[in-house]
Image (cartoon, rainbow, N blue to C red; front, side, top):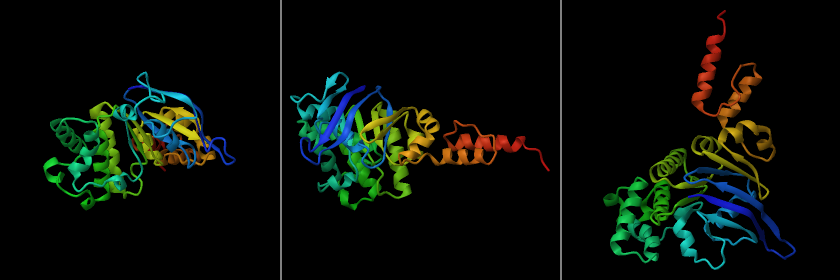
Length: 288
């Protein structure tokens, strides 16, 4: 499902003495089934942009189209938007409230007025999609689970709505490394197996470089860069640091090796690539 954003502007407290422009004529297009990494420092406008994608916030000006469906139309029913765009916010487990996992995941589909059989099928399918066995977990309380499992339940509740676009705002915040890897692998599999368009906001540049097909860098309410991970990270290293962002650790290592005189390729972005380059350089060196 393609997404087109045209001159999107959002001003908080518009007309007031302390107004602030969070988005400033943001324009971009996301292709169907793309996996987009959204990055930017605190205050860059990422979260504000995300809240426009399913109608939580209304823009001061500008338009958003999802498959030619204008979701910024003020007359549009929000239910129609949220059928198409599902959003998982930071710490989504705080929004879990039902006594069982099954009931919690069923909450969204139930509000769509679906038949009981369809709701049951959606709950079971979404639980299996996030790696939670239906029979084992359906009657458990969400509050008995680990942090990573709670995130899975929250994500299952969103995908049970069968959105065409899945937006995740810092979905691994607060998790240990094991839980973080579980969630990123889950998101990768959801994209691969369900042909969803994914928009993922994260501060982990290494994971963004591995997962995303397209990177959007936001800075002070504008898009600073947009392109493939190699185009964004390898070409704009100095500028990314200037605006307060890290670069993937593998790229940082490659830069340091080149400064030490090693003939390392400049377009390196993965561990496998830097390993191959180091082995190539070491083989080419004469023994003493």
